[in-house]
Image (cartoon, rainbow, N blue to C red; front, side, top):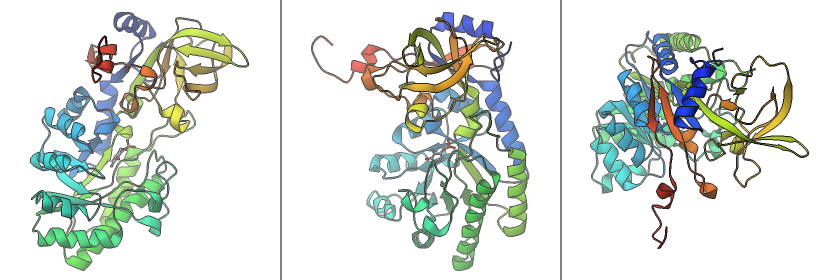
Length: 415
Ligand SMILES: *Cc1c(COP(=O)(O)O)cnc(C)c1O
């Protein structure tokens, strides 16, 4: 039987586990590529559509390279992410640098790569001036505050968010950019996250279209770039429904036709992470302990240090037990890691097929904000990442961390 979405047999998965050891992340290249093709098709009506990948979602150069080969750029917000983007050959408009509370070195690096520098705050003009940087491409991050009610639960109310600038600051920033004769000016926002409702995504797009129109009316400037941010959700829970990308494209097109005459040359972009790789990554872990006290616990060899979303957000991830999908015998389990934190649980009170020691557990939809959010609390080591190529071959794209890696920043005799 084929594992839900992962296009390999369970037998093969056991073989991979034997060869590479557990736990591991595995990413499905074909799934990612098909998804990107769908996205592109949905926006093929737009003559200047360009998609960025939020590097923080899966900051592995092999993934970025695969995406680059498909014409996807990088949305970076730190030095490390800029260096990764550079390493895979991205430059100029292929990079958006969307940082906040930014360090000088990061501005310098982003500028040297010719990235679109997306300013989080108007005060950053002062930083750029001090650094003698006049970027060729600039963009401004908009925070609508209480002017809209479309921010969702994950990001919260825009007026409570630290990101972006007010309308007044943004309009002033456009004037400053014009005075500096910056030839490429854009607008950006990121106020939705994990959003599955089309109406909310469209309201976000409409908000930026309206802002672009206001800028044209006030300053006679046609923005060169409109970045709708990321935040498109994926169906983590079986009851969730995926965003229909064709519908999103179609409705954006209708909105564009009705509002945006004169903006035909403007680059339209998304900078999604989750919606690009999220559904196509799996964390595979082995059952190493059973424990029956007031509840039944299944101890696995991965822990919250490998995947923190369930622990910190109570996020739901589908779990399947390899080779057991057809079993009628079920149990209610908590699936737990080994961290000394009680929220180190991948699932709570989950009905699953009866699990035995040695079984492989697959945690789904971990292709974004999975490995990348890992940490080393309790001295836990982060694990390997594998890439399942379209031709069925496997490439190890990150090795396991070792204790030597962990201790490498300590200078202590005997360590
Ligand atoms: C995190 C982030 C993204 C990506 O978010 P997803 O939910 O993965 O789409 C995009 N842009 C910015 C500025 C971000 O901080």
